[in-house]
Each structure stands twice: as C-alpha cells, then as structure tokens.
Length: 269
Image: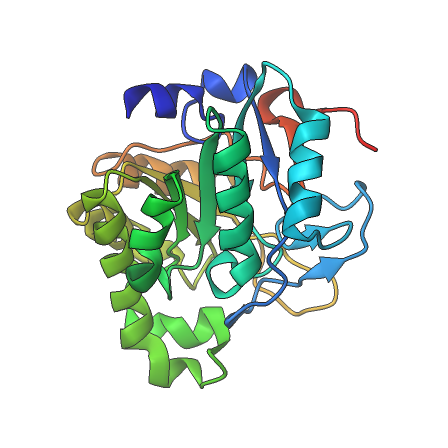
C-alpha cells in the first residue's frame, strides 16, 4: 500500500506537487445535510470548494472525461460528490468502469461514512484503495450543531448511530486494506475542542491520516467565523501527537482535475 500513498496527491505531501487527480461528479444525491455545505451544480471554475460542480456526469461520461485527461501525471480517479457518493448507484458503476479500463489508476472515494460499514466490501471489490471519511466530531451532543438532518431525521435522533457508522466504516476499510484519511472541518466553538478525540478514535479504527480543514463560511447561510491560522495550527499540532496530519488540502471541487499543489488544471473540454 505504500506506493499507493506515495502516488496520491491528497495523501502524501510530495505527491501533492507531482501527481494529478480527477474528481468525477456523478453523485448528486446526499443522505445528510451539513450546516456548512451548500451543494451547487452549474458553477464554473470560479467557484472552488467542495459540493460544487459544473454539471453531473453519467458513468459513461465520467469514463470519457478520464480518457480526455489521461496523461502520465494522472494517478488518481475519485468520486467526491457533489452529494454523498455511497448513496448514489452511479458511483459504483463509475468505479467499476474505471477499474476495468484504467486499472493503473488509484480509485478513491470521499464519504460522510454513514453507509460505509455496508459498502466497504463493495468498494474493495471494485478496486478502491483509498477512502476519505469526513468525521467532524465523535461527541453526540455536537452533532446537531454540525448537521441539519441525517437521512431526513433530526440529527439528535441519529447522532449515536451516525458516529458509530463512521467509526465502524473506517475500521472495515482498514481491515480490507483500504487506506483511510479522515477529514475534519474545524468550526470554532463547535468542533474545535473535539478534534483530538476525532484523531484518537479514528486512529484506533485504523485511519492512516487526518486532514483538518478550516470552515468555509457561506454568504447565504449564517455560520460561525472561520478559524484563525493559529487555531488551525494549534488543532493540527495537538492531533499530530496521535495521527499524522495532511496540511496542504485545497478543499477541491467535486469536478476538480489537475495537480493540486501546483493549482494546475489539466486542459478541459
């Protein structure tokens, strides 16, 4: 698995500046609603943040897009939205097609983890070798402050199940040989105090890496302020005592393509 990590620009800091990844926006639907998320489709490359894509692709269109952008620097093909990949059948159809046509590419999926325990085996069968799970808190009391609903239910009713599913999913992937990175959104006064607990619990389940990312306040939604640079550094330093930290994340779009460390976008259609 070491070579997989060394070639993945979102798992290795050297690879971040050497290799490219392509995100395929085939997953439209989502099973939760994060308070900090605003999914937008139809946004050009001027809008750069998670949950944003120019358009939703079919699995066949996704394969065409990979073919168009294929070059030696491209090492990773992944599904990161703009919704939740694991509650969209198009995700699995796309992964299967990519694995058949481009077996040399590292397959990657970003997920909120709710369905991960039941989907981990399928991901492994489809050739997925890296998974990113967004775990913002392992404190059930904090869940309602981060999520507006979970599978259509009030977050407080789903809090325990949600956290358990995320941690069980991480453990299931690790046991299957899938490398797991944990993304954690740092929200001052909400998730900040629990970052170390996220690192501890994720490490226990076999997570390889943590990526603490700052809250992006959205203009159309009231949000806490974003963390300061010092708050971000402090959280990473505390968690690094438990779990290695990835510190170069650029919070990519769901249709990002190129070498992230160079802010380089491969030629588009």
